[in-house]
Image 1: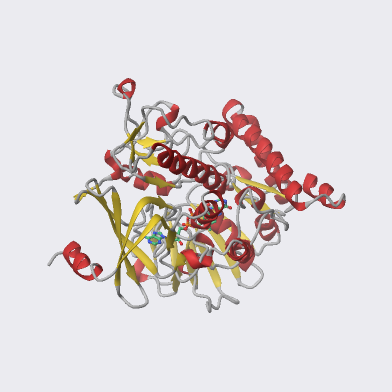
Image 2: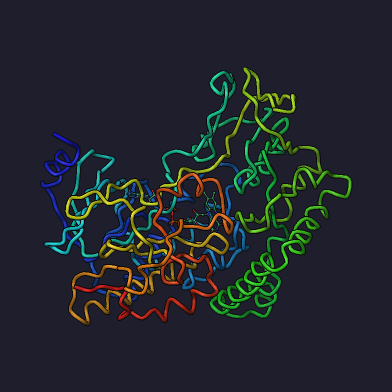
Length: 500
Ligand SMILES: Cc1cc2nc3c(=O)[nH]c(=O)nc-3n(C[C@H](O)[C@H](O)[C@H](O)COP(=O)(O)OP(=O)(O)OC[C@H]3O[C@@H](n4cnc5c(N)ncnc54)[C@H](O)[C@@H]3O)c2cc1C
């Protein structure tokens, strides 16, 4: 018996039907559930989540200091005010999500420890059949639904990405990936090397610096950071004036988005000026004698990779205090006691943390098929980074990298609810994005232009992602400022939507 037949045999025992099935209960899945409840009351739906609780990213990551790198006014939902400091810990984010769940009675819609393994669209029935494994009992369950709302994030939660290094297995100390941080890890007085210099490394280093003997951030190449107070002036002023929190949330969001948009545009128009300002902020902490050229000056233009925010310059303060240091070099090989670098220098370590990124998993490791024929998303073209040519009744949430991910959760949700209402109004069961006659000669390009944005996990997994066209309808443009007006104006009668 093959895997599908086994699933069929076991799943046939129990099938439930919902109008909508949501994959995942991270910030996207909980947002989807909220919007369905409020914008489409009476819709039956279930959110299936692999993990034992809600939170997604904020549940998976448990390393010391885990926090957001964007502000919570925009990483939070537009409908629920954020009332604390803008950069938040994972616990604070989960508490906020927990409040959204409790205040809107969403818990009854979420099933934890349910991993979706397969999804098949049937053109005869106009239904998705979704098979999920219950991880606590091993039982296979089957769901049918008209609409599949993929809120599965973009990376594999079960394991992080670790490159292949020479003699990695020879190292006798402890090796940890931040995605699997053991909560009882004793790092007091230990020599720690953190490999990587993304947001995770930049958070981890200052948060363990006081306890370890020394922590070294080992990077192959430098990264840009933004730094400043973990506070927003306009928000503080409005609070002093005792303005209503809902207003403060809205005004702060508008303020942040305006500033971010201006900065992003500047990185394209005046990359050298933007770079100078970013580096000046780092120098203000580290002083003129620190080798900023080697350790904090990337060769690429700002914003080609996500720029993490360092609240109160804590990373730079740990370096200045001598508790942490940065080494910019390449790994030659591992030894029993540490790392030999290409420069010939060695780094001795008791613990090595591989903050080396994610495995891209844009479809939640779900085996997709249409009428039983395997579906490869790389063969499709995306409609605005949320739907796919030839794939009926499915939307996925892929947020922003330069702005907060959640801004798109709200935008996509408004679109889904509008689309579902439209389908009901015109009495159809099925909507499939298709290229229009005028799109047929359109060049098909990779999901993201590497000249524009090129983090490692995207580059490693690009071949698995859907294609993009060169027209606004057929790409995820990563531009919230444009999409906030474009999405509500999407013409649902456009020929890109084929209804049956
Ligand atoms: C450490 C860290 C910090 C970050 N900080 C920020 C930030 O400050 N600002 C920002 O905009 N972005 C940030 N990001 C990016 C962040 O992941 C997203 O912004 C956001 O949390 C994604 O939410 P999500 O719900 O779409 O996906 P996730 O948080 O990845 O949640 C997806 C959920 O779907 C579940 N799932 C996946 N596949 C299946 C399946 N087959 N069956 C059932 N369930 C499934 C997963 O278990 C998971 O719980 C950060 C990422 C990391 C790793």
